[in-house]
Image (cartoon, rainbow, N blue to C red; front, top):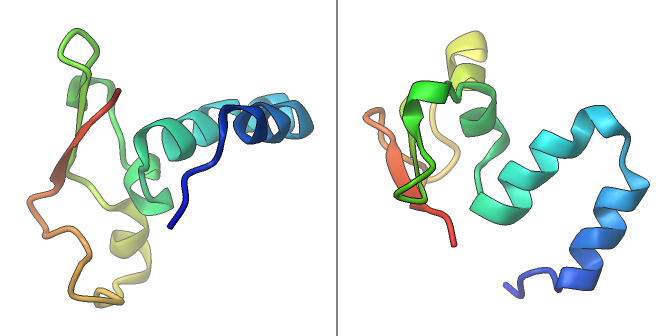
Length: 83
């Protein structure tokens, strides 16, 4: 997998509607999955430590589906370092 370049990220942000900016930032900058981003709460963001801890997978709760792969985060969540 090749990460997006800075120019590609800026092009995506420029083309996206304003309401989608937070989702793009979480996906492009932190690599959060949609299900992790939708369950994210402020108390799980450590801005000074540049870390996000995901613990709630809202989409899985809504559709009650099993994990798609064995590589998906466990129920306890995962810690994402943001650089």
